[in-house]
Image 1: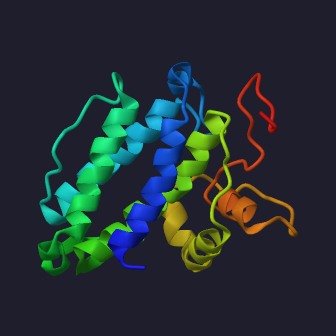
Image 2: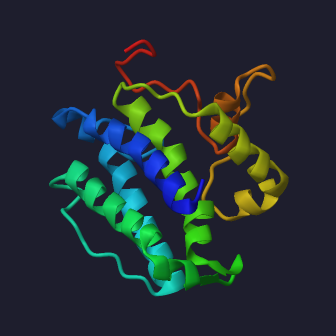
Length: 194
C-alpha cells in the first residue's frame, strides 16, 4: 500500500471506533494512565501537528476543539492528513528530524504517525467497550520492526516499560505488551465481554 492508502485504511478503523463512542464515553478512562478517551484523540491531533510543523514546516488547519467535539476534531484532522498524503507535491517534500535524519514526508507519516493511529485504536476501543481487535499482519509487521530497536524506543520516552505477556500469546497481545500496555486492561466497572 502507498502511504496514502495505508493511512486511509488505518484512520478508517480509528474513525469507526470514534463514531462508536457514546457521548458519555469520551470521559471514560483509557489504558493510557491519566488519559480519558478524548485524550487519545487529542494526542493524535496534537502530536502529529507538532511532528509535521517541526519536521516539515507543515501547518495543518485547526478543526473543532477536542473538548467540545472529539469526533469532529478527529474527522477534520484525519481529512487534513489524508489530503496532505494525496497531494502530489508532498512526495517531493522532505521531513527532517535530528533523531531520524531526512526522508520524504509521506514516508515519515507512514513510518511514525500512521502506526501511532493504529496502536491507539486499541486504546480508544478498549476504553469505550468496542471491538478492540487489530489487524494481525500489521501487528506482526510493527512488532518485527520495533523489537530490534527496543533500546532506542525505550529511550525515546514515548513507550512505557514492556509488559510481560505469555510466550504463546497472539501477536496483538505481544505488540501491546511491547509498547507498554497491559493487554488485559479493563476499565473499572467494565468487563472484557462488554
